[in-house]
Length: 243
Image 1 (tube, helix red, strand yellow):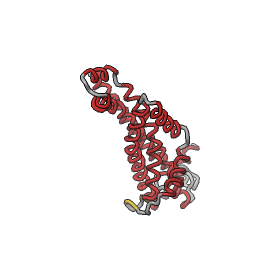
Image 2 (image 1 turned 135 degrees about the vertical axis):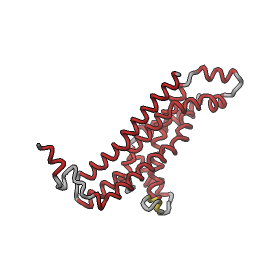
Image 3 (image 1 turned 30 degrees about the vertical axis):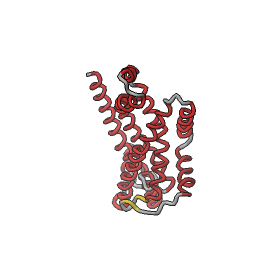
Image 4 (image 1 turned 120 degrees about the vertical axis):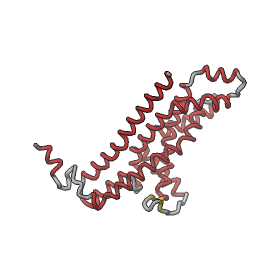
């Protein structure tokens, strides 16, 4: 059958010509580590500004509300590649970061701008996640807290936010999965994540398709089990709420 050639054909254009792995497998191992570092660190850094943006978005002060709305609209309505380029060549063209290699393959002078760009972009999306989580908390909780003498800030900090954070945890985990995929754009600036490793192998070996096939399989093996795990956690949390 024609499709059997997909697995037996070892030409440079074959999807499954993995003959490069013995020599270049380390590129993919380091790429996985770099990609996961980018995704996790970016989302963790995005949480605090996202929470502030969400609270500003819920503020009755029109100026504060408008500032947060403008930030969210700007980062959600422009391409991540444009944001990354502006931050890398603009902001970090002025701020000089010394070249230092972390773990032997993570160039700090490239990693930090990448994390900043991804975190700023992610904070716009996470802010809306937090806002939805806060609005999902029953208003009766706020009214009861205020009737007990708690201030608006105490009510938000002690009553509303703990429940809202529980509501948004699955969505935050999904944001990390999204960031694993979006971090591939950092390869355009020479950051040695998974997609950059695939490009480097393809250009070095002239095997055009298999490195990208392997990268796609790795992304799938990271994201699909993670998404199923998050779905299981969501179901468990719903059962806990009903109980």
